Image (cartoon, rainbow, N blue to C red; front, top):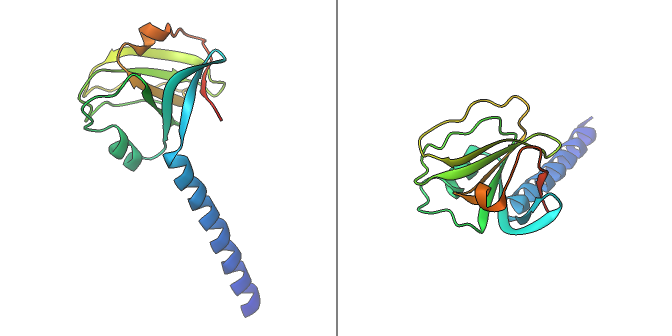
Length: 142
């Protein structure tokens, strides 16, 4: 019985360390934005936790036009702590744009989008520059 328990704990430890390693690698990885099957020159970072949100965008002076952030499982967004207007794009599970916010001001919150799955945060006026419309397909490179 003791050998079985030791083996089970060892396998559990190995699998959890692999999951943590993948999470660390994904945190630092940069992707390219794809809009309607065209790769754009905008670098996207994944944000999965509140701590990553604090470290990546809160209290930043300026968000450049060549960088952006992707929030996974986001049905709403609050811009508390941001210092400038940003553009927000909500997408569903099929990567279709379901809602856009241009020049979203700091210290505000969006409405709840029940079928929202992914939120892209881009620099202000990027929606107008890229001409992003509803039903466009928006995702990242692999």
